[in-house]
Image 1 (cartoon, helix red, strand yellow):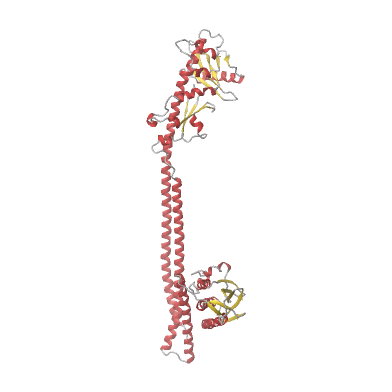
Image 2 (tube, helix red, strand yellow):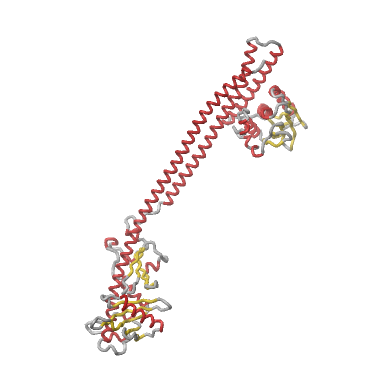
Length: 571
């Protein structure tokens, strides 16, 4: 009697199952792609929002800083006006007017030194201020027609005399305007650190004839600049009110060559520039083209801007963005794991369904054959009963595996180890498996080197051995010899199953113990399986306080179970 009917029955159900799995798989792939797209869109939206928030905060801060720089520029311009006032009324006018009085009568007379200038002041003009006399180190006179330079007071080096004559000639003939009959020059080149305060005397046709003035060292100008700083607020009262603005407005004044002429106490105490909130104002050429830097220091931003400068939100936003990316990454990992778990469970259900359908189809067919009286001979009846018995054993083995697996997932698996003589136990187990081995003409040999007693749960150990024997029969060739052996090693009993199959590669020797894991080549070859047999073996071995592993054998693979030895059952 052939088996065409059950094979056809199995084939039809397999085709239906594959079609159903294909539809379900397509739906799962679409769902996964949709989830990934939504998560990616979430990341993009969060990134766009973070960028907009950072850009808005940056623009707000930049606007506030620009306003503060405008305030600093305004303060520098105001300070320049104070300098001009102090310079004109406290320094330039008293000194130059006194020098003018000294030379008014006779241009050919000897030049008057600065120390003698107070003698030429009239009662109406008043005395020369002390700060003006302090900076006047020498007086000079340059005859523009002859180029002769006369100096009285401090001695000048040839380099300084040359600089003063050349600079005054250039100023008078190239830069000075008609409105500027007085002016100032600075130098900090080639070791020369001098300034010159001058006035031009012209003839009847307003042709420049003589340049005369007062000179000295720039460091002596500090009192002048300090006096300019003391003339009240540099910023509008509407901004600072009654506050002492000296605590947050600083002044730095540079000469034409970049040498520092004056720095206020606020900037001297602050870190070296460049200052973040600063403005610059350049004075007229007639005043030596001095550059004034106004800088806001300390808590100026908190006073001049309502609420102060907005704090940078970049660290917070970047932290939130990184947190979002981390959460999205975690969600992707969980989603991928759930997808893999769903795929493994789908494969498991498909494998279990196939494993159940095949023996059930066999049992049903041969039972119907006998019930309908289609058995022609006694040998056919005996063969039908053998097949029913074999398939029933396969069902029992599969159901026991599923029960062990279900109980282990719920944490309900429990074993009761007891001392057991392994040799008769193994022979009994192999005899029970022999009908299934006969389906593929597999020969099972037992190899026991010495009597070994182990502390095992008989039912659990039987399930482990049946799983190893079933794998050896399923994956090995027909007509192979499977050897099951026992030996003692130290305090452990080693039970091993050696087959003549394709073996297990090094990279797969740990994966094969994972739940639902199956090799791709086994799936492609159409070898059925649930992927839980070896995981049940390892879990039961661990519950015994033992371990499992696989190693290469001479013709296939060798699966080993190690459990603790026990006392003799008789003892």
